[in-house]
Image 1 (tube, one colour):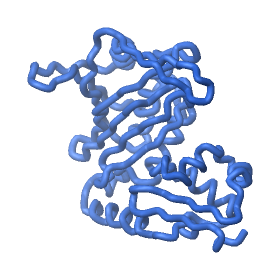
Image 2 (cartoon, rainbow, N blue to C red; image 1 turned 45 degrees about the vertical axis):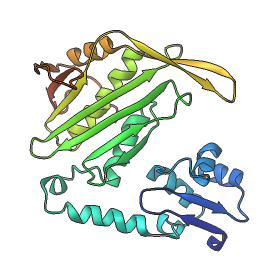
Image 3 (cartoon, rainbow, N blue to C red; image 1 turned 180 degrees about the vertical axis):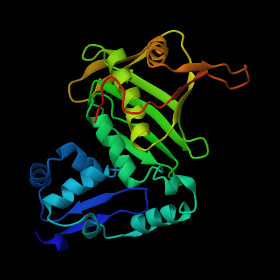
Image 4 (cartoon, rainbow, N blue to C red; image 1 turned 180 degrees about the horizontal axis):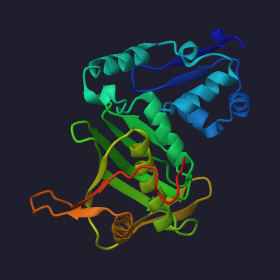
Length: 266
């Protein structure tokens, strides 16, 4: 495979553009195991933040490294600068930043319960946003926002906006597994506490997603009361927070248990 026939342009974390000359996208999908739609989305800049595992699979198919694929290496430079800025801090010393390796760990934990999502780090590597594509799987992760607090050794779940296609999957079981995956990540990274913010309770909500390929609607549901039940059953304790403008709901706190969860996802 002649790498001169392939041009990768990966500027910072803003986007990845793949222009293929003389290489079939279908061939690349077959060789790499990456879906043709994912490769097209990367090619068309519809997927500006592909997962590291995806890049590794493509590089393996082309018999090269990720660095060989990148015509513009500024993303590597920027990532290294981010890491360099954190070297004096506790999160770096404890390997608790959302580094490439730790993002890959999160992806593995989620994928093992059937949640395939894009995980996008903040510039400080202290936060990540997790999102999936609706109608691709029975779960639509609209936004899970995690933040790691080094001083308190805590993972803060700032947002937990997860919808489920109840015709295919049971909402409570799926969400329980996602919470369990977050707990398992915290355990592996030796983080002591987890706190969920803004758990609202109240009436369920839903939305319809129109699949362009089949022209059929898929309905995704979110039952807020089930989220509270899950946290209660997993020994989270509610933290009383006084009403204030902008407050959306209660906070739920737990200590991370070591090695005694009823079932692990990794």
